[in-house]
Image (tube, rainbow, N blue to C red; front, side):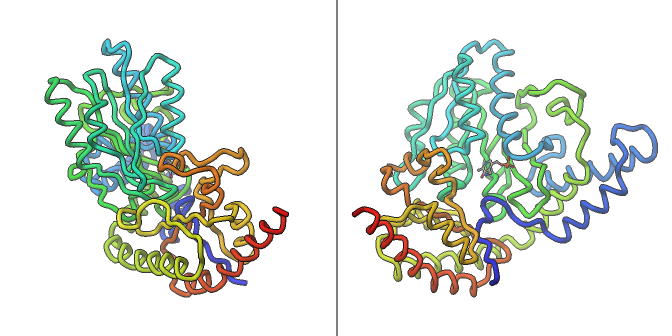
Length: 396
Ligand code: PMP
């Protein structure tokens, strides 16, 4: 049976060309780029070329790019780094605002900081999962040092109004003639499909993840606009302009840079192709299966993502069933079944526990074909029926 992978939001396969680059560079440029010898200097050159390519891809300067181990580390450096630098500047009780539907790497960082005398405020979202910019206007204060709102949500795909938020943030800075607040966005899910030009978006910090962009695992990027005050979280050497110590992972950084450029080149075409597939999937499921709700808002969503709730179906059971039938999907960390916790995203858009049971995330990608959608739509109704019948019987 042919396997059908529909979990691209969790991890993308590495582009073959990129995998080759990484393999070649790992062998060829093993020297430490800090070395003064020819080998070291050669490694430095290819590494800085990668930094330049990443920068160019997002409309940034090369010195604004910090390579990290992934999006989690980039988010941690952005949030903790800004807060600590603000403290060092004499802001004793900094205020930060993060949206209620951020990834755990943002929310947990914020939660940890709230225990360290940082005032953390959650920015609510509406039923579609979009933040309310008017509410941001109300809660932003002269003590706010950072606003962090993700570009697109990893569970339901909703895209946030970054330009409007950036405008609000700039307005606040101007009003108080202050450096703060800064605006950070986690664009881990967005880079394959949306405009990631930092100038057009108006962001001060932006996170990217290679593992979601057909690049190698183990590398990410934090864009840090010139002039943004940020301190490193780990202690060590002066790498990455003192913002992230540790010997540079040259081959992975080069692989990520290549992956970003390759994705950029096909972006407009791929957005159209994948959106068509996703819309067909949504339309056919809604037609063939009763009791289905689309989570979020397809009109303002990542083109590759569909999250649905199925009445009377436990998401974990359906994921396992789909897996047995050859489909790899996830609950979008929707029902954190192992912990039995409800999804904070679905809770934030007003769902009840019962509805949460049925959240399934289909995330499509570069290798998804229309035959895959056809097969899924053909097989899904019977699977749902089996699970619903089993549930009904177990209720007696
Ligand atoms: N942010 C978002 C929006 C994500 O989807 C993910 C991955 N699930 C992360 C951050 C963490 O990424 P990484 O695995 O690269 O640390």
